[in-house]
Image (spheres, helix red, strand yellow):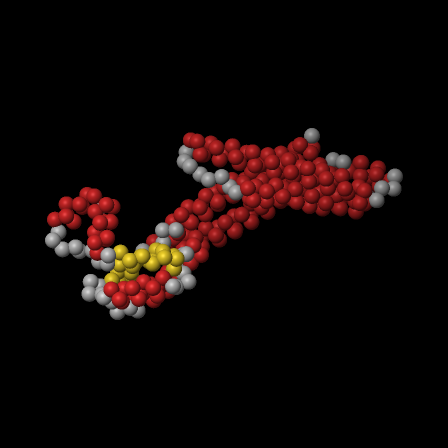
Length: 269
């Protein structure tokens, strides 16, 4: 019964960590999906020569942060606008002159979608005399990376606090279970049992309680995930490596708490 109660307390402690991990993983996916849309658009003057455009496209496309540089002519820009903004179709159709500029769209590599890289590419593009403007959504890009930094700091602080609380709960639960068997420890000591012989079954019991608690936490977390996914909104399930890490953490904390508790009792008898 004590082992079952200890496993239940371990499961509830790791369940809180699992919920935090589920929320953190989905927040990370949301930020990554927004970050994938970060691109630099270089608007060119109407009098820019084709040779100059080709040179800029080649040089900007060769930058290590740029994955692809695509040239968009005035005609292509107008076709995109008519397709993306059908409510302004008559306005575009009735205009005698194409008001949209030609441009170079720079798609960034996955590891280079950061604020420093984007600003560096924009400054590099503005150095060309035939470039009229460079846009990359400075305001929302700054907010995106600020939100990412805040999320990383919050994850580190809250995650560390949750793990610390879980470790304290696990340690307390297993210390109570070992304290209830102090008479058995004393009797084994009287008949000549060595510390290693006495310690091993308690370490195994702590590992078993940690494993069962981690499995219980995984089941509870998955149950909450299915409820949220089925009745509220779509969320992604956490990776298998995170689940294995949680199970390993439960086993480790169980063995560590049992080892510390049995060590104190062995000193007392």
